[in-house]
Image (cartoon, rainbow, N blue to C red):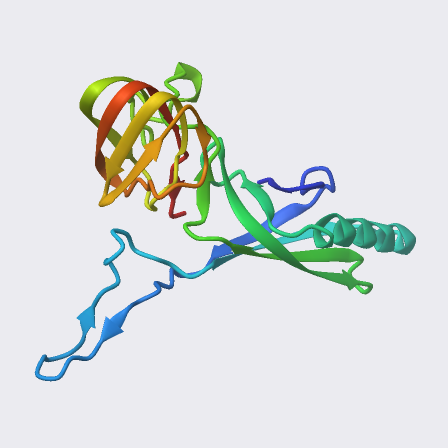
Length: 233
């Protein structure tokens, strides 16, 4: 199996994967003890979604290299190909195509002189919700459509006066869409309203919660939403 992280590709180094383990999900719980109420009150879903702590995915690889100089050279190349990068995309052949993790890597490499092999342990700390799609929602290209995760839907609309439209976020986390507008359009969804003129916006108060989102569009012009699903691995 293959792991790709920036300049590192496990296949290019001829590494044989031995193990892959993923840590248990740790939720960011928001609880409160209230006098007169038994137990605790759980407010964890007050933002419309479950929130999680970063998660660790660990891979172990091995490669036999009988020449000591070459073994040391390979160790240096592997270590440097992993250690110089910060938060980056991690591709893993265990997960669906066109998905990636956003992670940092902490490599541990053991040069075993007795058995003439390298053992490479890669611990990736992944941003929640851990698995991101790199294809925008509303892209119904047949070759890339995943029947397990994707939803066929339109994400561009023509607005005259006032319309109510639906956008489905098939992921497990709220996402902030990039919005492109011609004309003047007001967008109201999930308790927030923004007034937009012609242009492209990437940081607004508009968030799409997991599931069905009903948006009220008021004004005249066209509007499109670009967003990417995020799934728990």
